[in-house]
Image 1 (cartoon, helix red, strand yellow):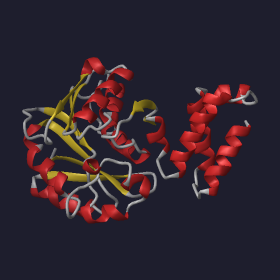
Image 2 (cartoon, rainbow, N blue to C red; image 1 turned 60 degrees about the horizontal axis):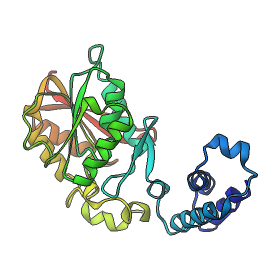
Image 3 (tube, one colour; image 1 turned 120 degrees about the vertical axis):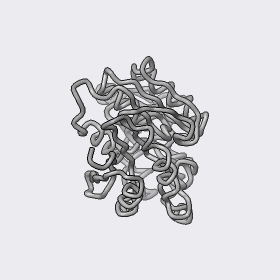
Image 4 (tube, rainbow, N blue to C red; image 1 turned 90 degrees about the vertical axis):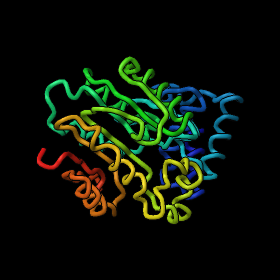
Length: 279
């Protein structure tokens, strides 16, 4: 399709490394086409309305807005998720957290009670519920907008009857017990945020990024609150930044928890799996 080629050229001229992929996604979204439609009917005129939508999308992408923000949705764990300004864009690295939970060696059918702290779009909880059909989960977030989005995503992916979402400040008001607690908390040190890539700095919610002066504030709160909520044999899994492994090991030990680290596809420490020492 000529429109896709022109779109890719325009994005490449702005130095966007993923120009070809971004152009395909934006053309499909602007014209209401699937990839198959584009392959079969790519020579048909786009029409004025389609051309105007595509021009708007390309202008936004050229200004640094991520594709996921433009189309308002993204895929995670092979599932579709809607986004809102209050939620992070689900990232492939976070799938390491889902993989780590599934690799815990739990009994057939999986755990019964899940807790997702800082649920955002709900992608982690929904992905786990899709894999553990006998489980029920609670997603907690401080942002009302994020909770609305997470509820919609649970319904979109057919797990709303097993998922509940509530507002709260980490686990302070919860009683438990939970078999698996997961969290992808804000873990970027506040002073570093100004130097992040524009796509992150300007378009991701700061509440979901800022982990305090050293990036560890959320972990301190979670580790102060969660251990008493774990069921016997329960686990706490958290996503971490590439340079936070040793800090999390120390925090886990201070709260009587063992810690094992899972690495992402790039080989970076990505997830810390914690349990009561000896469990």
